[in-house]
Amino acid sequence: MKTVTSKDGTTIAFDQWGKGSVVILVDGALQYRAFDQGMVQLAELLAPHFTVIHYDRRGRGDSGDTQPYAVRREIEDIEALIDEVGGSASLYGISSGAALALEATLQLGDKVKKLAMYEAPYNDEAAARQGWREYRQDLKEIVDAGRAGDAVGRFMMLVGMPADQVDGMHQHPLWPLWEAIGLTLEYDAAATGEDASVPAKRAAKVEVPTLVMNGSESFPFMSITAQTLADAIPNAQHPTLEGQTHEVESAALAPMLIEFFNG
Image (cartoon, rainbow, N blue to C red; front, side, top):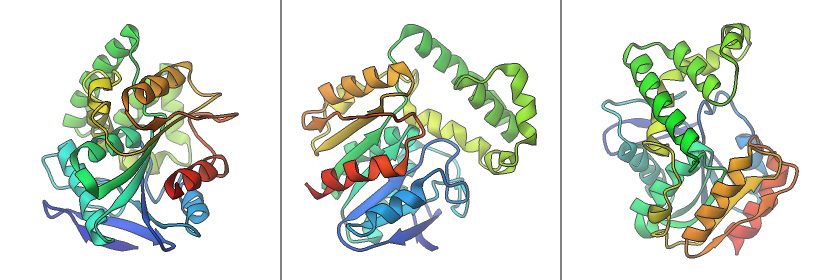
């Protein structure tokens, strides 16, 4: 483990593999180094080609969490990592981490060379936007009360778990790892936006080559979202990974990223 200090004094912990041009991996909700969902395997597959950085987003694992939170602070964390490893990098983000990587690309100028996104969870459907607003309001009340476990439960309901099954998840062996960072779900929500609609106008300002991916077996709206983003971004490609769900397999993802970042 290595650390770097962000602009506001927050310590950001990270692991580093390989050598070459830099690729920073940006986790989505409830992901961090202690609860790896394929990022280590992905880093190892990319390491023969690149310097790969996987870090704990603020509030997770070994990283600090200076308050008050703002998405800009998370972008400064990415900037600190970039500065630490040479001044420029490409970004890969998954789910809400893809939304954060998009915002970082927009704000960090030529420090970001390429952007790869897998299933940023934007959704233009009216019912989905309303459901997101309700989720954000509920989540704010829960987080303000410091109820990390309830935050995890509310997130699980958002992604489709029936309410009567949430209590049973408290017995899951991974529950303590989720609950430990439950309050940071508000950070993911902030990065995804007020109503989680596709930020097409903002995406149109992305100037770097961009890879916008989705899985063929994922939620149906993900392919529509990916296509909308790819249509908006001037220099974007939109491949669909056959057989993949929202929990993409590293072995399916790595060849796409190697070709894109090496191109």
